[in-house]
Length: 99
Image (cartoon, rainbow, N blue to C red):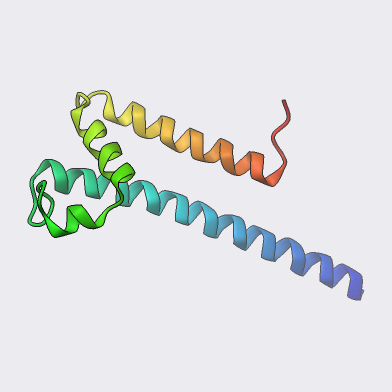
């Protein structure tokens, strides 16, 4: 019975970890969209010389500016590709992706 309980706990912990990773993943996309919107709307601190804008890494600033240059109709497609790319990366890290 102890072995069964241990396996059950291990499975539960793995499921919780996967849920947490999924939550973090969606949070990252939400934060990216929020930052892109703030930049596009020229919110306080997000202009070229803004302290908040300058606090972001250069690669993130470039990604946001490139995203904002896209047509509005294309942006959801790009976000879906980002989501797919991250999910694929997660699957490969788990070792469950077979080529």
